[in-house]
Length: 283
Image 1: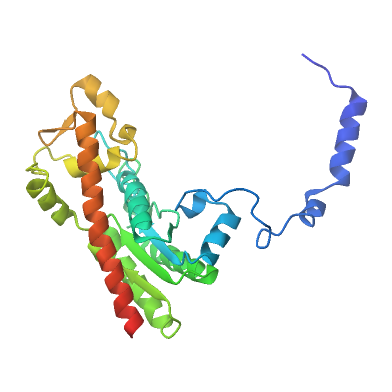
Image 2 (image 1 turned 90 degrees about the vertical axis):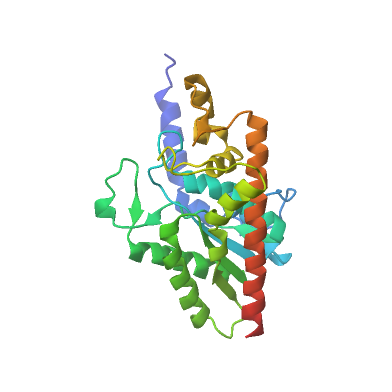
C-alpha cells in the first residue's frame, strides 16, 4: 500500500482550511447571465437541460410546459411498478416535440392515495394534500420562470381529479394574467386506444383475459422506451412473450404498433391542448 508523507497531508488539510466552500461560493459564475459556451442540446426534458439552455429556450419563445403524473403500483409479473412513468417518457417526448417549443417538467412519479394503506410491495403514495401541493408548486415554479402555457396530464386514473382541481384553482387565481393552465383529460384515453388498436391495428384484445393489469397497448408503448421495462428478454427465455393471448414478437412489429399508438394519443392530446388555449385566451 502506498504511504503518503504526513507533511503532504498536513499541507493539503491547510489548503482546504484556507479555501472553505463558503469562500468559493463568492466566485461562482452567475448562470442567469453566463454566455452558453456549447451548442444547444436537442432535448425537451427540463431536468436533462442545463440552466443556460432552459434560459435560452425561454428567450426563444419556448413558453409551453407539461406537468405529467404517473405512479408506482402493482402491474403483474412482467411490467415494472413504474409502468405509467415509462409510458410518460415516450408520450411526453412525442407531445412536446409535435406541439413545438414545449418543455417537460420532471415527471411526478408518485400518485395520490393513502400512504398508510400502501401495503402492496413497491407501492408508494402521496397523500391527496401532498399530491395537490406538489402539482401547485410545479405550476407556480414554471410560471415564475416565464412559462405561459402550462398543461397537466395524468397517465393513471386516480391522478385526474387532483389535477383538475389544481388547474381550475390556479386558472381562477391567475385570471387576467394571460397565463393558460389546464388539465388535459383527453390525454387519458385508454378506451379510445383500445378501439384504435382493434380497428386500425387489427388486434382485438380483451384486457381481462389474463387478469394481470397488463395490456398489449401498454406493453408496446413502453417497449419504445426500453424493452427491459417489460422484461422482454426474460419473457422470451421463459416462453412468455405474449399478453392476453397476443404475441409481442417479432420485436419490430410490436415497436411499430407502439409507435402508432403513441402517435394516436399524441394527436388527441395536442388537439385538446390547442382547444384549451383557444378557450382561455378568448376570455
